[in-house]
Length: 115
Ligand code: 5GP
Ligand code: ZN
Image (cartoon, rainbow, N blue to C red; front, side, top):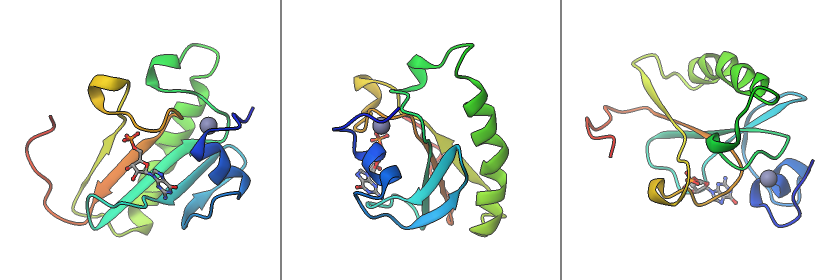
């Protein structure tokens, strides 16, 4: 379930500290160490999935679970004016941590540019 050299697996295990935004038995949300907006939360499955590219019929349930919790996390962080959800997938998208994660960005007017 855990990958030994994966930073986010280490965060799930508590081997690397993080500031928690939400947690249940299947997912963890925590604040990004290098925030790109006033609110920058990462939402990850506890089971290691490398990226969006590895989502399939068998593991896709965790994605819908994550997306049912994102509005709650946004509300708790007062993102009433709107927010952006991003998942970088692969090298061209500059994915730096190979454990599936969704960025929640908000707390200011975000740029129109997505790329
Ligand atoms: P990616 O570039 O893969 O889409 O996003 C990875 C994100 O993880 C980056 O925004 C980076 O700042 C964040 N990150 C990397 N290492 C850590 C860490 O140890 N703790 C926290 N809280 N965030 C991290
Ligand atoms: Zn991992």
